[in-house]
Image 1 (cartoon, rainbow, N blue to C red):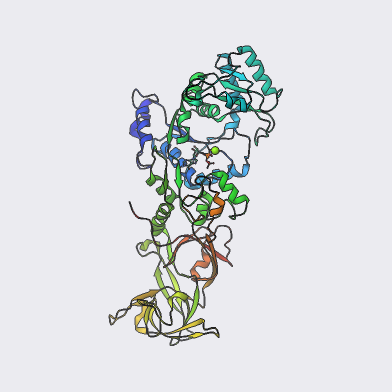
Image 2: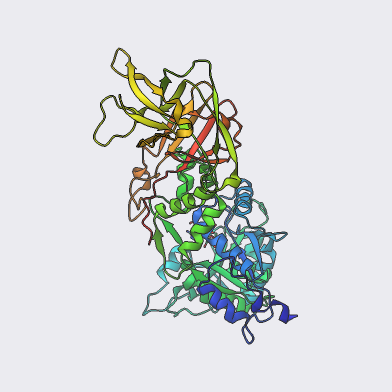
Length: 565
Ligand code: ATP
Ligand code: MG
């Protein structure tokens, strides 16, 4: 049996090797603590908000590690804390993880389902003389905490087992007010690790729980609950972020001292931080609740649903998390690197199309007014298998207003009177002038086309420097295009005593209402992604786009400002 699940099952394709895998390799090798066991991890979000890109990293670490070892990964709502939990969040969390491409199969759990077992384990600790009911208030507890030289104190530490048992049962029965008593683990009041100085493991708190309602008025503390949840589910490796490192001795103490069905091992890795954004759910919720963004899925949010709506792909997020790696030291990654990963993916997968964001009409004066031609163009310059589409051409086109200058600046190679330009995939045209309104604003540009240059080629070999994109004014669609920039103006909006709200970028969203896109995009589906020539990568908005009012989000621009390391 053990033979089947040894190291030779490791699937290295899934995830780059990292220090966690070295630990696991040792653990499952002959003589290791988990020899013969299937690697089993879990992802334990607290359902008090939507998942963000930091969680995506944890998801890839938890689910990816399980995949790599042909193991299992559970999805568990860590809902032992009864505040601010909501079914809406639970559904969103599931949707996001599934979208990222991971499957918890039938192993979806709620930590709150284990409240009774946790209570029984607490009783077991009291009976073993390893926990006691303490009547110090929170304030007194702080006062008696001691310091590195002085041990902590509790006058209730040596209370007889029977008395603690009785009080703990009555705590559960609701006989005492909130905050009047706690259950504390009896470990070591002099420990250099303050988490071990008889930590509180239960507190009285009359809060309604989103699943258990008013059934409980005592709730277990995270450090006590989490190892029990892991042990009940048979988790072998409990992967978590670095801030839990100093809590690991307590984690081990709990599993060692209760009659747990299994003994999981906690391994910590670095939290992901990204600049120019905020990542804590509390702050993200504030942005939503105070209306600074349109919702959790606002495309400027670093939430998974926000990134999805913006146009991110699971592959881009996966590549990002894999490339930043899993380390033991926290660090901040540049937002530009996330964008770089998206661009990398979309460059290969997004169909090309033409869209004019700031249109001006170009009239081809020598092209028959009633004629329409079709050009068959490739959807991707490198992948013929992505097919072709037909774009139409007539005597009236829309071009970008910045592609014409009546008086060109130096090195300007686009349209100006007398200059020739290639209309992408169609013809070479020569600019002949423009029409202006009473304020001197250019309202129409004129050109003549050269019929010998069909497809944009010059049979005589003459040089045409500029190539511009366009759409046929006679059959294009109107579209709204939303351009995004960083949500914050500074790399670290929440460092120190900064109020991150003060650093919101007022130009993080620019809406262009009168854009023109080629007719083929009328059939685009929500979430479809395109590279608009010379503009960037765009995604059909999953909420607001309709057949009659197409809405595109700019996922990322074309230029890569990220320097390759
Ligand atoms: P937040 O402060 O954003 O609310 P959290 O840690 O409280 O984050 P949880 O729902 O408790 O959020 O997290 C679920 C899992 O995701 C935990 O294992 C946690 O360590 C991990 N996680 C959360 N944020 C990050 C991050 N920035 N980088 C890596 N892992 C993270
Ligand atoms: Mg949390």
